[in-house]
Length: 160
Image 1: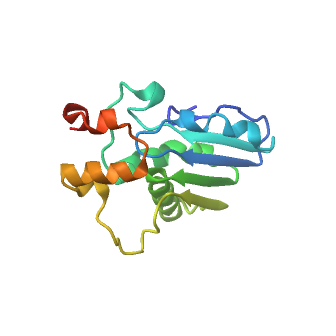
Image 2 (image 1 turned 90 degrees about the vertical axis):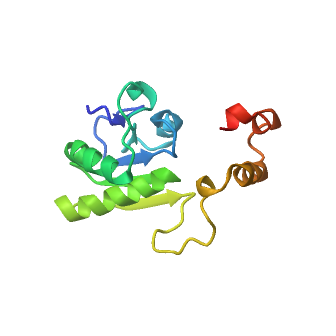
Image 3 (image 1 turned 120 degrees about the vertical axis):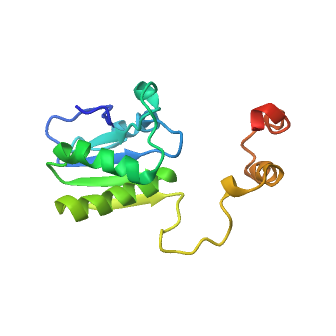
């Protein structure tokens, strides 16, 4: 099996392969418990990008286009049965672009594409992306999420 796929519970005779794409910085590991919740006819295979999980020593792919151009051909042999894609945040964009690539290059489409924590690509951006904000505004925006301890937010070296 390709290093791109992590299948926590391989199925002997799946009827559908569910490809899962994590958020930026996330590993395939986040989907490890999902396989237990799925019927025996669905095989969950999470995508492991370079510089994540067991692929930490590999060089990063720094654009979505580079990810798709490398991932698409690697996944092709595993799309020999009906498949669906789920992506969260950056994973939603990667899943969407992979589906577009598959349709264009090998005339394959998923049975379903589910996305979360991402805006539809055709909609205009109403608010500047957080990563483009000046440092002080970025830190202030992070505070609204209430997920980063003040000890980190107030530590200049950590925040840089």
